[in-house]
Length: 214
Image (cartoon, rainbow, N blue to C red):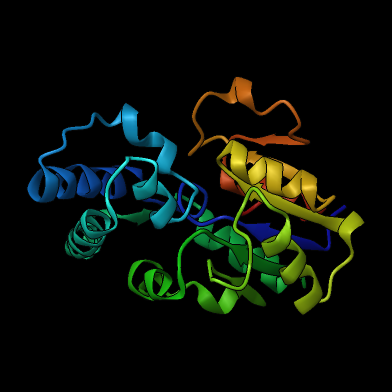
């Protein structure tokens, strides 16, 4: 069915929620004395870090301090992050069968290098689009459109897999199908335009007409 599959990272390929939000909570307390619950910060999942901090009403100077410590704490806790079960094998199987793959992420290139590259998954992907100043972030379609142009790939045979409503909105704006990675998603009722609901990574193989993992 699909010849190209694009992936979000956090909550889709790797389980980062507790580390990212926990590090942000601690950074806020230690730098500006702000206390936020885990649930109050889940909005940060899937959007660029600068947008996360701006939404908290911090001054530019405060944002810089929080961002610096947030990054430091996230790096220190990186060993607590793991790849979702069977995701690595699924990616290998897709690559072996000739499926083009890409990453669409709200991480900057620097964040990608520090928080993702060390897992050794980059070589599975034919293109990686990170958050940068020259491209509008999700929910705008621009990152997906850039990936499609770089591959190149056909919109009608492309699937984007993510765990947030922002991911879904970006996919729909780019006119590609969207699948929810339910293993990392919150409040499935919000995914009103999703084309597929995936309950485990290996279910991706079915959408590419590939036999299940042995």
